[in-house]
Length: 240
Ligand code: UDP
Image (cartoon, helix red, strand yellow):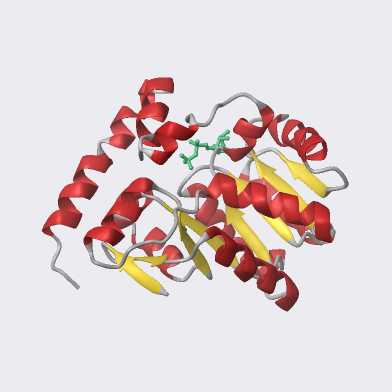
């Protein structure tokens, strides 16, 4: 079921439902884009029509952040399970090793996607990573990157360029890429490569992942000022 939070789509799927949807996309072989909604992204989309349109046209948009989970509950449309983008990506990598799905890692600082590839090989023996590319590139390199992805025929493309760059890049290139499951995964390769950490489970469960990120990276403060605004907007929004 699809609802909206402050005008942005949100699919009320559990992890196992999301995985089933993505495996169905792989079987259908049409280019499809998957997004992971959190409060920061929803707030960014309030002032960015292009991003809002992309998110609303996503083939699947999962409840990634505690903020959107809370907002859905407040609207009387509760999310049954939070589906963190990192966990969804890991589950799909595990499935890829089992079912032979081909995966491409695009994004992160130079060398990070390659380190994530090595780690994926250790965590998911037998996985087929068909290509990697760093997320720092010039406009003139884009056709090469698109061709490298398309020619390696991945079933799953993980794009880690940060929000909203990854969503915009994917939306602009979906047709050329011809990948059945393309997902924006933010800092996931940094976590896999060991250069960033995820919040401990108790913080994730308490909805405090944002606090962990803020403590690790105080430079996120300005971005995170969007979070109290998100709460106020949801509390004052007209009931659906
Ligand atoms: N990144 C990139 N190219 C860019 C900007 C960022 O590959 O032009 C990468 C960056 O190295 C990091 C990720 O994008 O790995 C963004 O991570 P972050 O945790 O900030 O993601 P977000 O919170 O935006 O989802």
